[in-house]
Length: 190
Image (cartoon, rainbow, N blue to C red; front, side, top):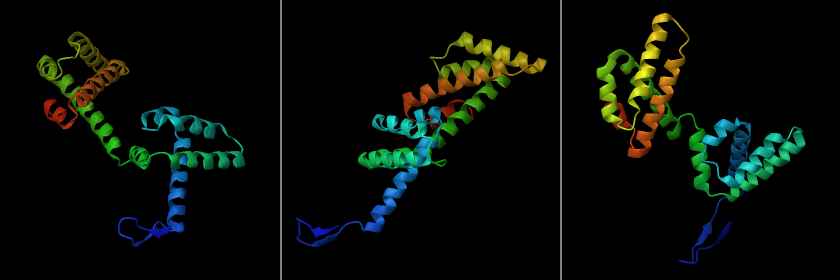
């Protein structure tokens, strides 16, 4: 788009038609990726509420022509959204995105804490509870005992997995409370 800058009177050159087309195709590709995601994964993304019904409608379409039209409509609705919102969605979808890295780091911390608690016994549990005062001591101790018994008897790891979920929840609460997950790594002894 060409025009005059009102501040200094210079001629300005906006984005070319090719740039606008590339941007529109990029949004269309993002819409296709969102429509292909399972509902559980989509719920974890920072998708604006106004787009969710359009994504669900696109998923419902079976006919190629109808789906293509609906994807175009979805892309149109997405272009109306704030560009920062679309960038946040792209970042969350990106395997190397910040949100994905944080989630992976949280899982690693939970695994390390579980291993440390199983190997360290009551001393490790006491140290963990000092850094996580909101944790339920009796529940963690019971899960630790059951997980150790499962491992000793060669049983399926039900309590082992439940312990992991419990630890992940505690670490996640702490991360959201402090805003910095790196303190948890040092606190859990990793």
